[in-house]
Length: 414
Image (tube, rainbow, N blue to C red; front, side, top):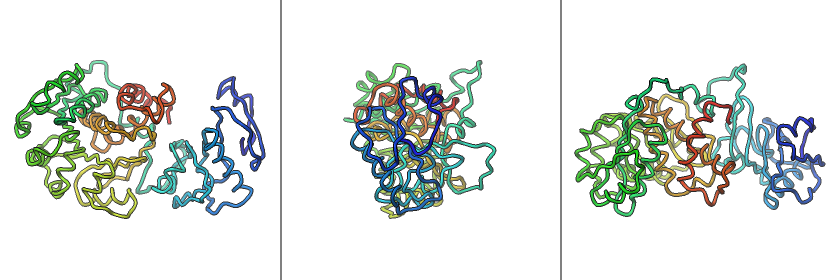
C-alpha cells in the first residue's frame, strides 16, 4: 500500500530481493499481509491540520487496522497523517506510526507530549544547506552528537578517560550497583570504583564486572577524599544514610550524576541544589521529577525549563521522549529507544554511562544527550537485529549492544 509511485526495481534493491511491493487504492481494504509488511504514510504534509476527511480518513483507518490486526509497521513521512504539526493535536483516527522521518528539522508538534504515541520513533534527516531559524528546542540525532564524540587517539591511556566512583546499592538492591558499574565501563570510563555498604560487599563483589574495583565502606562521609573524576550516586541506595548522602551531593566538588534514591533524599530539601559545590546532572523518571518539582499540569519540556531556570543543574528527564535541559541552552529531545526499556535497571545503566562520559571530559549537557541516545539505540539494536522483543528486553541486552550504538554515532544511523 503506497500513496505515491516509485521505481520498484530500485526499491527492491534497497529493501532486498525478496521484497514485494503492492499498490492499492488508498481507501481499498488490503487482504492478509506478510509479517514484514510496511505501510508508508505520506498522505498529508506538515501544513495539514485535523479533522480528517474522506478519502484520507478512510485511508488512515485502514492503515491503523493493518498495524493493529496484522502487525504491519507504519512509517510516516514528515508527520503521521491526522497530526497537527504545530501543536501535536491529533484526530481520533490519526495514523499511529512506528517510525516518523521528517526532513530538515522536527516541527513542534512532533515532540509534543500528546503526540508521542502517534509519532513513534522520530528521525530527522538533516539538510546542511537549509537555513533554519534558532528555536528554544532541538532534537538530538547522530549528526549533532558526532561533534562531541570524537574518535580516540592511538596513544590514549586509561587515565585520560576518567575515574568514575559509583555510590549505589543497599540490602535487597545490590544489583543496582552492579548495573551502574557495567554502564560506566561500557560508557568508556578508564577506571570504575564501586563503593557499597559492608553488608552487601560480598554480593556486589561477586556480581560486579571483573574490570571494576568494589570497595566496602562504613560511612559515605569518607568519600569526599576519594580521587575520582565523576560520581554516579543513587541507584538502589535507600534512605538509611540520607544525611551523609545529602552532604556528599552538596559538598563534593567533582561532577556528579544524581539518580534514584539520591533524588528521593533531596526531594524534601530541594534547595540544597542551589548550593552544590560541583556540577550536578539529575536523571529523574517522571515520579521522581514530581517529587522534586511538585505535580505540575504543564508540558514536560516546560517542567524541565522551569526547573533548570530555578536550579543551577543539568536535567535529564526520562520518558518516551527523554528531555535534556540546562539553563541557557536549548531543550533537547532524545529520539531513540522503544517501550521495552520500561523496566527496572535501565536507569542504573544510563546513570553509569552518563558518569563515564563526564569522566571523559564531555560537558554534563552533552554527556546526558549522548548517554540517552546510545542507550536508546542499543535497545533498538537488541530488538531489530538480535531477536529481542519489547516484552523480553532486559538491561543486560542494552549493555551488550552499547558498542554497536557508539559505533552508530560515527555512521549514517538515524
